[in-house]
Length: 357
Image (cartoon, rainbow, N blue to C red; front, side, top):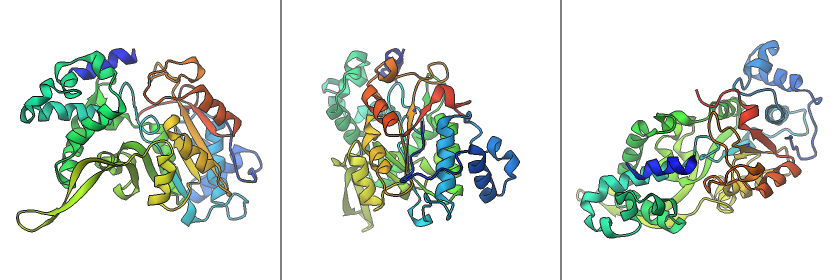
C-alpha cells in the first residue's frame, strides 16, 4: 500500500529509566497529582486531563513519572530548570512521514515549478524521473539523488525567500492519503507532550534529519517551537551584498551538516551545549540521540514511537514483522535495544486513543 501511495507523488513507538531511579511511590496517581498541582488543576481530574489523547499505558506512566520526578526538588530525579532539555525527531515522531517525507514532496513540487527555467532537467537524472512520472526510478532514488534535488530546489535564493516559499507550500500542500494539509497531520498525543513539558519549564527542540530552514518555516505555528529551537540538516549559505548594498545570506547547494544518526547528538552539542534529559524518536536515524539522552547521569528518558496502526495511520518496521518501507525504518535490533535498556516504547495502536486533532 505504501509503495502504491508513493507512486501517487511521482505524478504532481516500557518503562521509565531514572539515573539511580527513585520512583514516585510507583503510582501514576501520585505523579499526576503532583503535576496537577503545578498546573493549577484539581488532583482528582489530573489523571484524566493530563495527556488526554493517551490511553492508560506503561509509556504514558513513564512520561508522567519522569516529568513529576524532574520537577520535584525533593526527588533524586530532580532536574534544574536550566537543564530541562527535551528533543524530538520530527518525521514519524511529530508528524506523518509516509509514504515519503514531506520535504521530499516539497522538493518534487519545486522541481516541477522550476522546470521551465531548466529545460535540461527533462533529460537529466534524477530530475527527468520526476518530470516524466517514472515511478520506478523515483522509488529507487539514492541519498545522493535526494541531496542533489534538495540542493537544486532549495538553493540560489536568500534565506528569507526560501522561508516564504516553504511556508506557502506548507499552508497549501495536502497529503493525498488523508486529504489534509501536512501541517494538520501532526500527532495530537505528541502535541500534548510538547505542551506538558513546556508547562513544566522544559525547552523543547526539534532535532530532525529534515532541512532546518524548511522546518523552521512552520514549526512555531504547528508545534509551538520557535526557529531557534529547530536543529536540522543544513546547506551552506553565502554572505554577499544586494544591488542596494544590503547584506544578504544566499542558500548554496553544498551540504553543511547532515543531522541524522550520530549527527544528531553531535549537533545537539553544537547548538544547545547540553545533553537532553528526555528524547523522542521513531527510527534508526534517531538511535544515537535516544542512546545519548538515555546515558545521562541524572533523570533521563528515551521514548520510541512504534508505528503499528495500519487503520488510523500506517504500520511499518520491519520490527515486529511489519513491512519495511525504507522510510522511517525501525529495525528489530533497535526495538530490542529499547526494551532491554528501559526506553518507553509507544504503540500508536494501543497507547493513543486518537492520532490527529
